[in-house]
Length: 273
Ligand code: ZN
Ligand code: FE
Ligand code: FE
Ligand code: ZN
Image 1: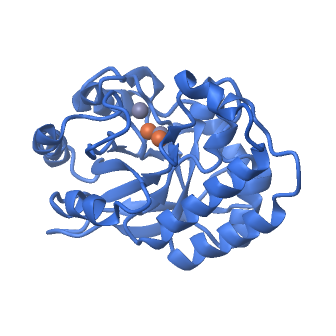
Image 2: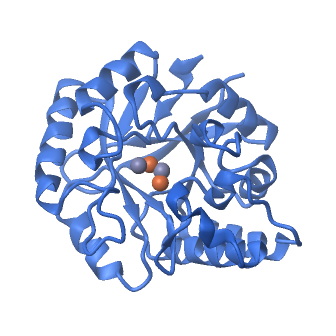
């Protein structure tokens, strides 16, 4: 089962809210029988609204060295990734950091809307007094902006707003149609992220209806556990695979590192039943 997948979304203790080293993640991935694993800890970007979200900037070099050593030990199995927050207006700073290291791929994630860290349980009160549909619309617009920067390989946890169970009330179809058009034109991949199953919403990101739209728009998919502990690597990938097939997907994207520098090449392989 698990050998049919690579897990491209994993975190390390360096970000201060996860457990384990890159080596622990690689062992866990081997034990889970995955075909590959990407390490994608949070990119430090200062000033960052939450100091406990990412490693310090001066740790970035150590992080990269730690993962590159494992990549050399396990060629073709380990990839050097990073999860980067998209903050409107900070594109040049993000690009500068991303260009400073030989990342195989970058997960682009939106965790903040106008400085509000909406996926942090400490900021739950921010949902009160706001129109939930507006939150979704602004979020999807921001994700579209992120994709169009060209900085990101994969869009992370696409419908993260639902994390605590907040669902749209009205018709978000036009907003989603527009988003899918933008994602497909930007040629980014979409992540099926199983962490939602471990959150109050108890549902994979993105949900079936959103994923089906992505498939119709021709957007490729990857799989990610968003592990913040080695035991979560590859978690619930059979469920994620079923969701992908239910959405009509017959293939998934595979990242192949380039010799030398530059982002990985994207290939596609069949999704097995
Ligand atoms: Zn995290
Ligand atoms: Fe994230
Ligand atoms: Fe993550
Ligand atoms: Zn994440």
